[in-house]
Image (tube, rainbow, N blue to C red; front, side):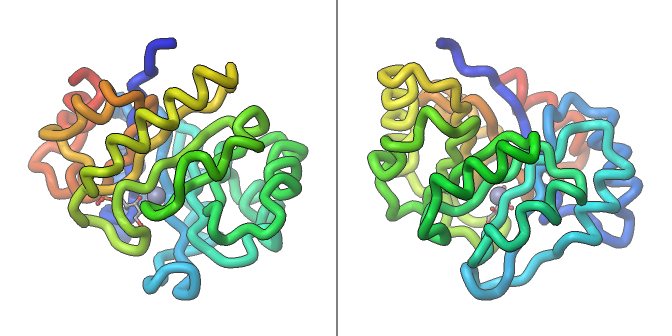
Length: 218
Ligand code: DX5
Ligand code: ZN
């Protein structure tokens, strides 16, 4: 199957003092989703934002919210993020002892279920749940901070993810997150990505709306 070329801008690098303006810009752009990075200072060495921001963005956004949980014990918060407006809810593979159950819980609430793999976690780890998920997120940086450098090995993992999905006839989309710019977006799509997350590149661009357009139509 051909990849879809979705763009999901990460608001981690947005101006939180002007959140309404930033979301308006995304509403008027060709962004497909809005990516929200939730960090707890335990699973990752950084704290970002939580439920009140997700709720506020949900009220302002016309785009589906793609919520990426980089937190321990995500099962405790699934219902809360659903009520806050998440359309896609992604958990970190490494944070889940009972991943299969968590995926079922996410889907039973009507959300799309995503699983994210840290750079050291092999794609083969998700073989037994690949037909249960809607999204496989390949982290192309170590999660925790925006503006890091893309780890080149991620390209192999994207190819492996695409191969696994084709082989198992899974409907999961391949999303890639971290260090994505216009300069490497083409090869990431070519490797098999459907959805590109990009934060720093978009929000530090002179014209973010135009930058999103370029990422989508590369
Ligand atoms: C990293 C986050 C990413 C990050 C991507 O922990 O999951 O979503 O914000 O941002 P850039 O594009 O700045 O690498
Ligand atoms: Zn993310």
